[in-house]
Image 1 (spheres, rainbow, N blue to C red):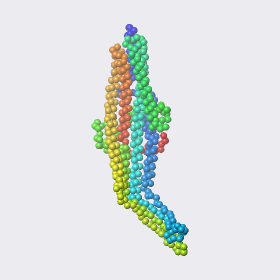
Image 2 (image 1 turned 30 degrees about the vertical axis):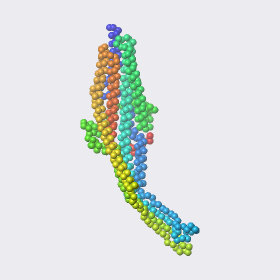
Image 3 (image 1 turned 120 degrees about the vertical axis):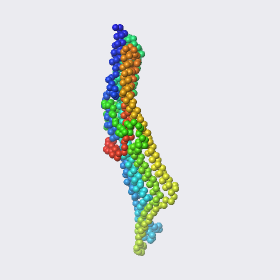
Image 4 (image 1 turned 90 degrees about the vertical axis):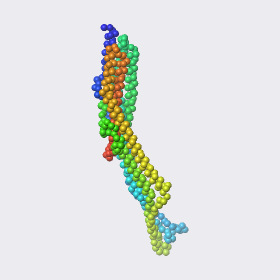
Length: 465
């Protein structure tokens, strides 16, 4: 046996060891689990518990509720005390018969039902806040889930590259040893190519690690001090995997899993129960009360005043009668063109503007749901394609390239390309799995319906971040 054949066989055996893929089940992407990642549901709960926006919103509701009680109260009565008709020559209280000491009391009454309507308007505004908190909780769930899943994908990609990097390192050793042994088929450019691919993997790892640290810091901002205490300055406590990718279920799959797209009108009716739309309904009710409030300005404002005037005896000792006065005042809205009419017009326009805001929000929500539904279905098809066909084919391609090289019919560069392509396909498959979970989180946002008890997370005691 010649040295050349012996060297080639030795080289092929080493390449076979170096490039043989890890056992692959064909059903899902197998990701190494080097560390411990905070559970997704735990991360969402911490973010919802430590969101300062929820605290501010609850305090704003308390402010509006207190203002609504105050708005329903009558204005404070006014007391007037004074001396009337004092003579300026002597300032003697009993010199003139018109001189008196007067005590008066007056009370005004706002127009029509203004007090009741103003209180009702503020109460309706206060009812928007629990819905805002419920919508905020749902939005936090989406944002934190997307951060968590993106971090999972980044760390999963790092783990896959780390798992396969040893094979590329062995490939460099094989190439250098084969080239040094003067195997005919091993050229210097094959050595350079093997080293280049290893360098590219190192660069890819650096980029992914930097992104993982950034994502860990972004996630730590949501979790508060208690949730991020173990992260370290760069979020070092989060960025492991330690668990399989969570398979989040759709809250209402009938709108997504059906073959035909849902009817837009029925979908719109369904989404009317979403907190983001329900709080606009409350806003519409409040602006409708504002129209009634503007109409009250066509009615007069009333006032009642009463006073008692005390007079001293005259200089001869004769008693003088005291005075009592009572009266009613009202304004008469006669010139309404530039005030009341305009205020009513402004209130009507404001109400119509909020109605337009509601229908625009509903239209955008329907469009966003349909887009997410289409993404969900497309990603499901890609997921099946990768698991059933593409990953097995990439595996077969890598083995075929290796077999061709072993039998002296293939090229070393083709073996390296096939191995890199298989690794990239595994990372792409992981990305599809993660992206599908992100879309499920976005779809579940639309399935949140108005529930008076759903905002209790925002109303309970919490540790301030």
